[in-house]
Length: 308
Ligand SMILES: Nc1ncnc2c1ncn2[C@@H]1O[C@H](COP(=O)(O)OP(=O)(O)OP(=O)(O)O)[C@@H](O)[C@H]1O
Image 1 (cartoon, rainbow, N blue to C red):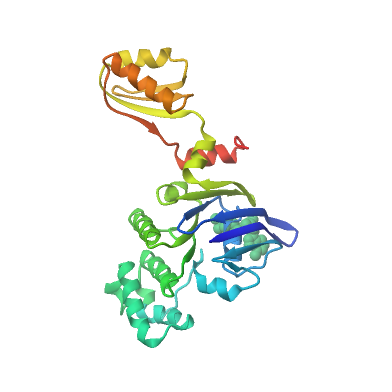
Image 2 (tube, protein in one colour):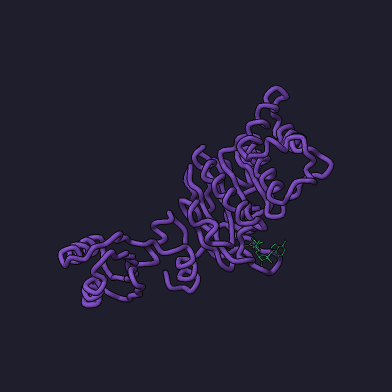
């Protein structure tokens, strides 16, 4: 649904984005992660047809970004990082304005606006003035306007920035809902944990270079060949620790009174053998699970150049 082929952008002598190749399949939620100034907004603005590439090309929903910008605009809902809402307009008027811009007929507009307001939980604010809304509500309204023409692709530049924790959770829940509706979503953030549980794939960008991208599980696997196993003990902690410490697979171990986290250089078979050994030794466990690295682990490893 979204591709970039060698996309790059210079601002004068400054190379903001070097050369990015990217492929985002239909129905994916792609998290575009990178620190401030990494080149996320530059890439996103190109995909939204608001900026010309210095090199390379891209397409969205089969439309070439530079060759068919009108086709791209029909296919996307775009939320910029610095969005504005027009003062002196009521919530429904704001959405109606965009619906007219997308040439949606008068008869359909009311129903579409009602549906979008309900999805974004803004129905009770329908007749309120936009400038009286809280920041979180304005942000939701801006997200609502990306949906009025029912685009298959959403391009959202830091949609949760500046929101309080509750509003961030609401944005995440909404993203999951939109994914269920079949939308392909590209969402950027410099806050890693924000994207951890709502993305199917991620790309990590730093200083204009895409350091790594792919399905979230494969990115996790590539950065960590060792496995982190968390074991919660009911009884037999000492016996369990002694088995773990004598295992040739063990690389690191942390333990608390009833919980152990062990880093082991092994595969699924090795983990199954270890579990058998613990059970055979009479160790009773409440849980034994293979813990995923966090997105923070991934980011730190990738940006330290530990992965090639
Ligand atoms: N119009 C411009 N003219 C000159 N330099 C620019 C322009 N826009 C962006 N840059 C520079 O290009 C680099 C990438 O900026 P960009 O806004 O794409 O980063 P970002 O990853 O979106 O960062 P942030 O999370 O802070 O929004 C930065 O060094 C920025 O200062």
